[in-house]
Image 1 (tube, helix red, strand yellow):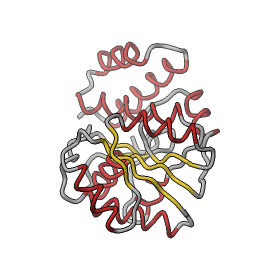
Image 2: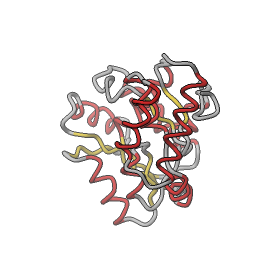
Image 3: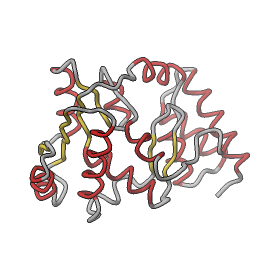
Image 4: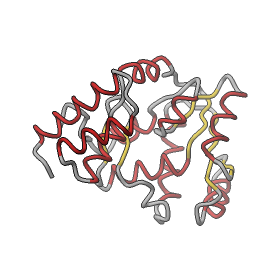
Length: 211
């Protein structure tokens, strides 16, 4: 692990290049080479650094509707990593992300986390939610059935990310709950409900302030 000072400098350089319109991969390759970043350090910058324009666009979409479309596995895995103190961060666009790249997608706690998260949403005044689960992930069908027995609306989709955006586009009264930046870019209304939930349990490092 390089020093925090070096990682902060790498962040500043990477963000500068993004603000100048450089391709994300090319800019990251350049910064990785200059600062000799490890794979995890490179991933941290990739996941948590955005151009000022990207951040502005995200902030313009922030709106908490009374109805939610929830990116099920994305939400559950992020929360698990945060609660396990396993490389989760508040990124510079304000959304919580982790460096696990889905490594806990088979975790037995996913169902419990989705139930707790749903209860939290309802306690915040949400009147309706749909949890979209990727059918290609093992046990997703079982998780869906268990959620439904608890009166929690859940659906399986082969391409969950695309279905989330399509559903939101067709329904003007829904907000999307996810930290997937590609989904956030395409969505019309988003909210960091993940971050609000996590704050109830743990304080996470912020990028770039805590570098």
